Image 1 (cartoon, rainbow, N blue to C red):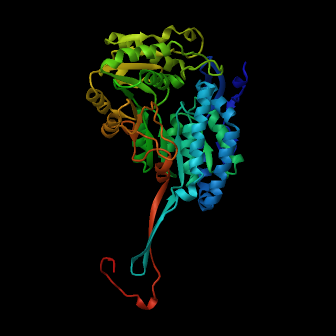
Image 2 (image 1 turned 90 degrees about the vertical axis):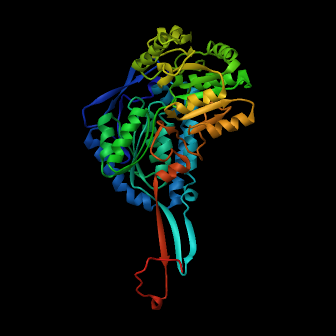
Amino acid sequence: MSAIETLTPAAVTHWIDGKAVAATSGRTGVVTNPATGEVIAEVGYACIEDVDRAVAAAKAAAHDWRATALSRRAEALFSLRNLIAENRNRLAAFVSLENGKTMADALGEVARALENVEFACGIPNLLKGGYTEQASRGVDVYQIRQPLGVVAGITPFNFPAMVPLWMLSNAIACGNTFILKPSEKVPSASVLIAELAKQAGIPDGVLNLVHGDKVAVDRLLEHPDIKAISFVGSTPVARYIYETATRNGKRVQALGGAKNHMMVLPDADISMAADAAVSAAYGAAGERCMAISVVLAVGNVADPLIQAIRERVARIKVGPGSEPKNEMGPLITREHRDRVAAHLDKAVQEGATLTVDGRTDPAMQTNGFFLGPSIIDNAKPGMACYDQEIFGPVLSIVRVATYAEGLRLINENPFGNGTAIFTQNGGAARQFQFDVEVGMVGINVPIPVPVSYYSFGGWKSSLFGDLHMYGPEGVQFYTRSKVVTSRWPDPGASKVDLGFPQVR
């Protein structure tokens, strides 16, 4: 057994009011190493009472934390940032063990997570309001932003460190207290983050953690003391989260699924485009909401581009993420791997061409949940491989005659998360970013995840709610605006005036 396989504790507990707390429901789930198929830990699922205990701790801590000076909040976040940096290898090892990512990919996730903590460290500047002197004679008007109170985040299995830190960094910096419900498949990275937050000086009750399933989620969605919910996951669940939480009077940002297209124009550098397509389609075994799952090959670029992609795919090493030589790890569960693999036969039945079949990869012969990189050529709208979010290492190639045809396919797709164009024509690239109906656009960049001082989120069925995640919109989401109109007049000038207030 390697060192990484000894990381996860035998029993994973909640984190409530600054300490580990065992679940009281009697219900449990298992944590599995997807590279071996072995059960490595047991996680206790929260009951309603466990969730209520976490909410009560967060509510009790909310007043003092809101009253804490901005400089002190920033100081605690700086400490958290440094502790995460010091423990980045340990945090990445948890991600690799429970999710299956290669260590290089997991370390990249931690690095992007750190960017969001660093952004939140600037909270004294981010929460600056506005002030207008003499809006009327002797009257000043100013705007401030204040925290909501107790807020919660529900995070997915594919980014066990980054997405929790997307949410909790800004939420806590803004003066809220936070309850995290991570994916029960990958719980340990969140537990470590909670422990590091305590070491950083973030007071008990400010960050709480409950594990569980729909019981825990539904209680968070309906609890009257929770003011806002953040969620990242599939579109059907995002829609459920949004509708349920808003019905219970909460502010919601719920990020759903994706079907990200990469358009390659005839003038594109073939080698560069092929490198990008392979990197973006098969990194993290395709289990990224920003993965490229469709390449739109325009005109005569299709054949040389597909050949270049095939050459690169043939060299990808698939295996356990703990082994440095491997470039792609397993999928999260056996059931999900089998659902992804079923798309390959389905595509052929519907008239597409299976150019590379990942089921022939030697890693498929192990007990891990592996599927090699696959390529489906001649895909079309109406085929399951095109219409559905596969969320695995399957790249579909759609051949289109013109830029206009490719653009129409992107804009007609119900998802609007991310997209990319590869071209050497600046005019075409600018027209694309102007025309395309997608929230995040890459120009010769295949995975256009915004840096931390912008915000992450798509359009259409990829987002439920008005505000995107992290960055400036994250600060806006976790605060509410208050406008104060103030006058300090001479009492002798006061009089009754029943007219509507006017500028004088």
